[in-house]
Image 1 (tube, one colour):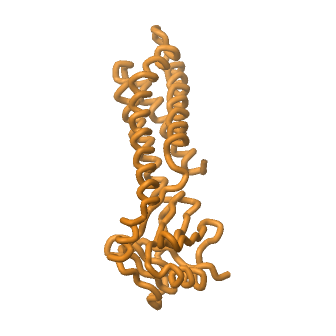
Image 2 (tube, helix red, strand yellow):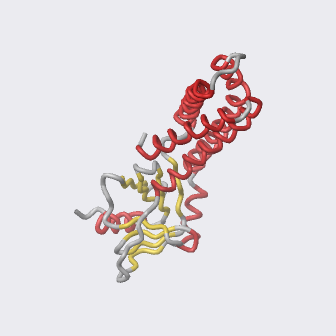
Image 3 (cartoon, one colour):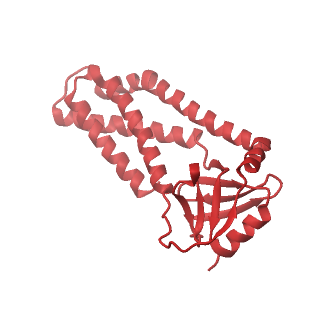
Length: 230
């Protein structure tokens, strides 16, 4: 767990504990659902921050490689192992969502009654009890994330260009970049000639960007020359 994730989680726990303390307990289930949505949003935003790439500052760059999008798409469609990986990612997300809802509607009422009982407590005591409650909630959500979410999110890339300054990819190439030289503490490069891709694994974002091409050796040699130079 990194610092950004921990800080955002603590802020969320304190905020929702305070909000729940102010509201009647009849509204708890609504607040809990909002907390689950907030937790999901935090994970999503942190993922985007981790994967954010810097755009090269220099304007003088040379195009070294441009993929044939039709060929790369054909390689993806024929890659049965990729289909299995993507299905695993999808089902992991679905299972996490279903398990989250089960916790909200089945487990949370039980925890609620154990922590709060039936009596009224002073404001400060209620707030502290809600802190415990949402900390337990966070533990459940983090456990679901560890169990169901893949350690490495596979993202197949079909449209990209390689320059001397980096790789530009995305819809109409967009402005998503992996800049050269690669930070070798953050990125790992893997080649699979049989399946037709060069993978750049972003350790920080837990994302495996797979650049499909019919000319794997050429793409890999360019990345080695410009991206892995010391």
